[in-house]
Amino acid sequence: MDRSIVHIDLDTFFVSVERLLDARLNNRPVLVGGTGGRGVVAACSYESRTYGIYSGMPMRMAQRLCPEAVIIRGDGGTYSKYSQMVTHIIKEEAPLYEKSSVDEFYIDASGMDRFFGTWKWARELREKIIRETGLPVSFALSTNKTVAKVGTGEAKPNNCINIPKGYEKGFLAPLPVKKIPMVGDKSYKMLVSMGVKYVKTLQQMPIELMESIMGKNGIVLWKKARGIDNTPVEPYSERKSVSSSITFDKDTTDIRQLRNILTAMAEKLAYQLRKKQKLTSVVTVTIRYSDFDTRTRQQRIPYTSLDHTLKETVCDLFERLYERRVLVRLVGVRY
Image 1: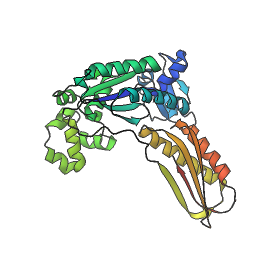
Image 2: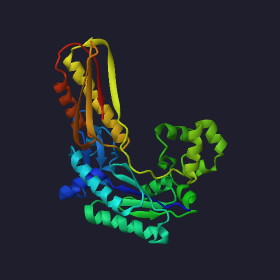
Image 3: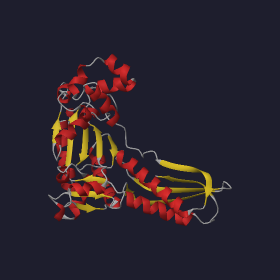
Image 4: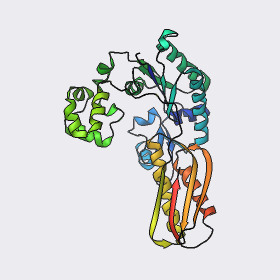
């Protein structure tokens, strides 16, 4: 049976939620993210992107590029609430769905053509999400996850597209190769050095050459470029935790050093969450003393990936945890 896969994306999600709460933000350049010296842009409106701003950019740089941008620290709890609203709607309507991030979903609608017409059903689902949440929604319908995800990117903003069976390869061919989901910065530089800037060039390369250069990943990439992807839609499950720890060469009681290290860990892990488009609702801090006595404190918070919220929580947990005032051997953070 041919597959019908829908990819749904909540356009500029954090910004869209903020605009629902404050209509004065409409049609203005908006940045959501950390406002401190080392803060980064967690989300940016389409208006701000015309200035060259992108998610993950240092906030100070973004402010220099667009001084008139409205900067909002963001509220993970509110974003989580809206994400859950959308999840509930999809759960009610879809036979099988996967929540790949706070603002992205895959739906396996295979076989629905016999009853409803998949394209019509997907458009009605989009309209229901918009009607009940007020959020802009883009989606693509195709035969697999890769083509559907790329299609959603081409449909944006706030639109939809259908790439039916037999059209996958032709749809992908004229696009920049970086639009294939698994192509990161390192892979992109390698491909460009080989003269591969567009998907069409990659489609024409022998699969043996891709395997010799990139191993198994080369085979997967070659197939994706041709619109071939058998990856199943899997029911959403909680992500694995991200963590960081350090064991000191020399045990310490330097409070300032400990705070600085934990703050750096908090920022690093928050960046990892944003890069993977994930949120966390649990923060854990660990201290191991020189006598190997290990203490851990955990706190639940509204879902977030924002620096300032996570740093404050980590520092607060450390203050409550560090009671013995003796030499510390190890500190760690987990989300």
